[in-house]
Image (cartoon, rainbow, N blue to C red; front, side, top):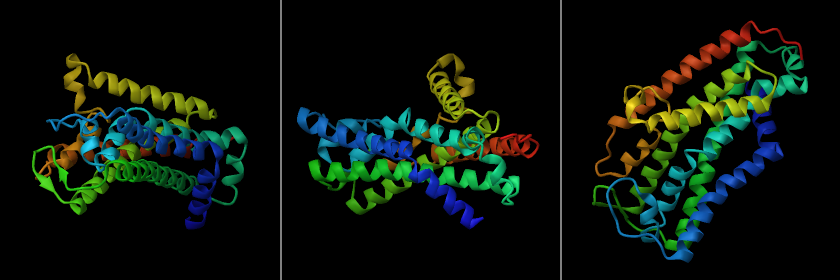
Length: 270
């Protein structure tokens, strides 16, 4: 299984489309930092999670602002694209049948595909944070961080908060990857998986902004994705973080079980 996972990760990272996608993810923080530097924007420290207004005060806010910007579109799209390659892409290329004759059990293959998606989510978020941290430090410097509570924490503590925030975002993307993997077992068209996952994600973001649907908000996968901002308080507020992780876990379990139920009995013709 380890050998198969290494092969899957190597194949995923070698695809030119995925490499270009990582460049786009890295380009957003750089563009944000450069545009802010040239415009002289930033503004005063204020309440809430408006990290963009604090970028010029401290380069450590660039990766946080980048996460906020990319969480609604670019990061979900990256996961949607690699999810399409997981099962549907193999079926579309006619290699799925050969993978199952290695021999590899369907459960093991499904597990490998999902673990590769988890790795992809980790790499995507790491690229965003690293690009933002480098660009922010070069253009604005790294200094003690003024939290959203108005207190100050050291650079080291700020970096730790940043790392934990990244892991929290990865957890949410892993739940989205489970949805993508399930959709990937339903079709042989990778583009259909990408579109379906993006439609579902966009619909959840829209529903999360409609007050009349407030009874649904707590059940939406994306509802607590921005809660990583609570880590930039002193002390950190964990309530929304824990609730978000529970929702992420519930989505991951449900859709991985659905993917297994579908794939285990699927007639592989290509």
